[in-house]
Length: 123
Image 1: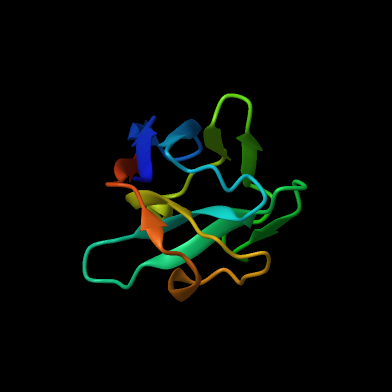
Image 2: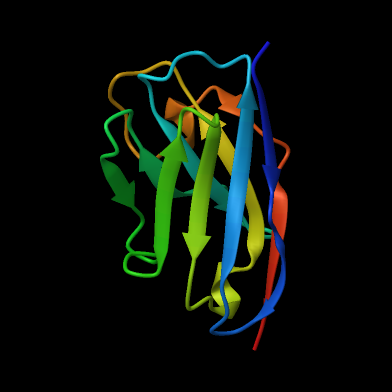
């Protein structure tokens, strides 16, 4: 059974930083994609960033230059470093994984999901 467990969320002021982590269990498909998504109240879940097994990444335009996704397969952990946070970044952040060798930054391409970690940004 695949389990994804996020941590690292919290409350920060605008301009601050947070680092999210996602520990994964039972997921042995190291050659496939993992990603971060977020969902604000009343909005659809949207893609933030994805990363493949070689470290190639893709980001939503809204976070480019501010967020960095990385993975450590030895530690079975996915990360999202978030800098220069804005109030519009506030949302529940979800870790996701799939069994695809190619995908886009969209929820339909991911089949495994964590429970989420809340990020609040005050102005």
